[in-house]
Amino acid sequence: MSRAGAIARSVVSIVIVVTALWLPPAWSANISEVDVHHDGDRYFLSLEAHLDAPPWAVFAVITDYENIHGLHRRIRESRIIRRIDPRTVEVFTVLKGCVAAVFCKSVRRVERIVETPPTELLATVIPGQSDLASGSVRWRLESSDAGTLLRYDSDMEPDFWVPGLLGDSLLQMSIRRTTEDMIQEVEIRARALVVGEGEELSREPS
Image 1 (cartoon, one colour):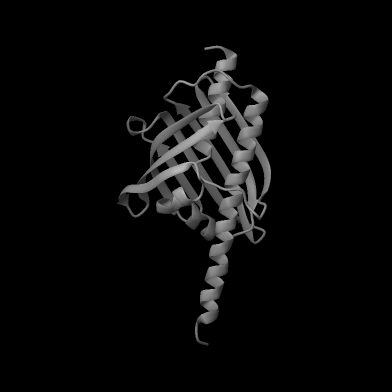
Image 2: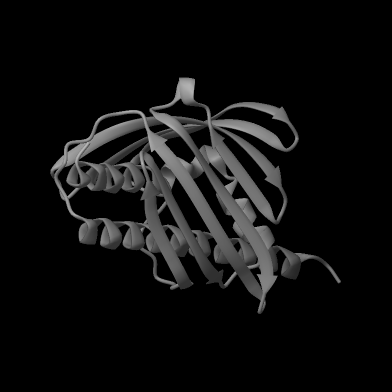
């Protein structure tokens, strides 16, 4: 495969998968670091951000599996397949992503997710049931400055062909913007949970 083809494949593969979760927000999460790179057919993304919401609320948002499809227009379906035990669940999503309105692809993904509330979530792709040869996503949440320090790492290997169309600069721009939108929407929803929790407590009799 040519370098241009590999880069284009990187663009589409990561954009399709990473756009799994979000809409442009009104709040602005403080994202301090984003890195995207690839090694052969495997692609990696990592970021660090500070969210203005506590870990329990962020964790609640990212584990609301039945409602993930409502977080972004590109998510066509999301549902729990089965809960293996109180902290392990298999989740199915269908994503549709496009790059520069030139190449569009729907991707089926089944992940086995291990929850360690409220500090960590590890999702691993099940290849035989997905359009990815392999992949994983890890969320690590730590209390920090009345909010959450988020460390997010993902890797993936697509199991489909992508035409060589786009260059490295567009890759970097697309991945960074998509990731920032993702984290910002998580922050919005987590803040809403905190507000709702406060309202419920205020209604309790003294």
